[in-house]
Image 1: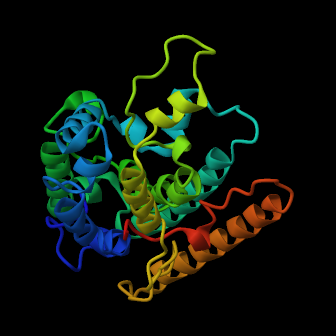
Image 2: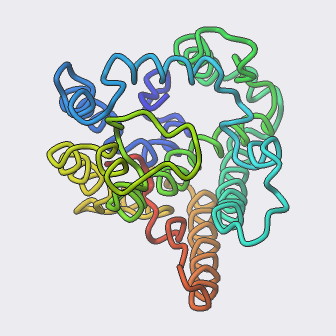
Length: 291
């Protein structure tokens, strides 16, 4: 999905998504060379190892659906729309709406009708490749194999940008904050979990947690993936001007203004929280999966 290889450089969808796939191929390459390689970090610090992780990922992808991919639909399907004080949901829905509004303005400018979407052979080839190679033509995934309307295109692009930016920040940025206390997120267990309540002792607990060297490697991994990149580009920041038309440029400015207001609201709310939730504060969200 990140390659955009079916789309020419001048294509509006290519220009819209390019900032949101910055460094992603590099990150994936590094991960294969240092994390997922035989005898790599995954083999060293996790109980399931590299082969187990690959099996887990393939199994998960086999059940991954378009509903899972689209944030509001996922929340609804999981029945968490009414949970109080769910800041991940609240912040995420605001950011989704801001991205959706931005994407809608761009799409409506370049695709004024259903026909304009259906007759874009490059766009349809790109979507078809994602369906064929990313989801193995699995119709039960719900992912589209082609797009018929501007509305379908808006949702598809909104979901891509949201997952490459806000969703990644939500699941990645707090790993060190949460996992630095190893009992919160042990990468392996040296003993099976207790079967009866009240039987655990400090000795049995310590004997279950990973060994010191494994813990240190795990903490290093958490620390590395939680670092901000040196050339950070927050969500909505587009220093490389791919759009020259006035209408898209106005849409970018409006998008940035919406994100600034969301950030202000989040920071005001966090002042009253004993444990602030800032992982989806727009200035702290990268445009892309760049680490």
